[in-house]
Image 1 (cartoon, rainbow, N blue to C red):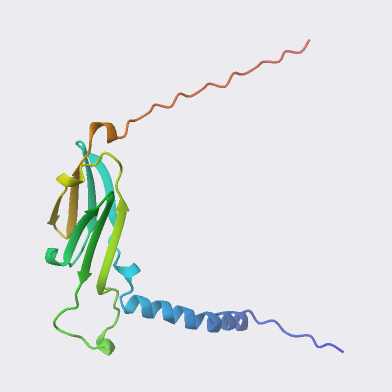
Image 2: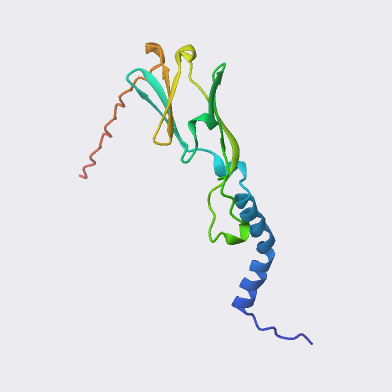
Length: 157
């Protein structure tokens, strides 16, 4: 004879939490240890006055620890966030969301960019790379023609 088992939703949640706990703690360890993904700078790319502008947020980085390189049509921004000289013991942190270590961000450049005339500047923790573009390389806005739907009237006799 089979027994009826009582289902416990909280017991089910506890079982799921125990199964995911090792993976979740490894993820937190990776972030805490300064995994490369956490260091990737946020970038924005736009065209202004015939130039391609690439802006990368580099909060807290010394411009001497940042390197901008172009090889072919690939732009690379490399850097390293160094730990503070005043070392704090791991146990003394409450939350710690800042990552340390080196990173590299690459992006393909469009055709028509004068890579030999590239300039880079750093201001307010943002590195701005300016690349002149040929007139042919600047995007052209194409208007969209909307077709009006023709309505057919049906008359009954």
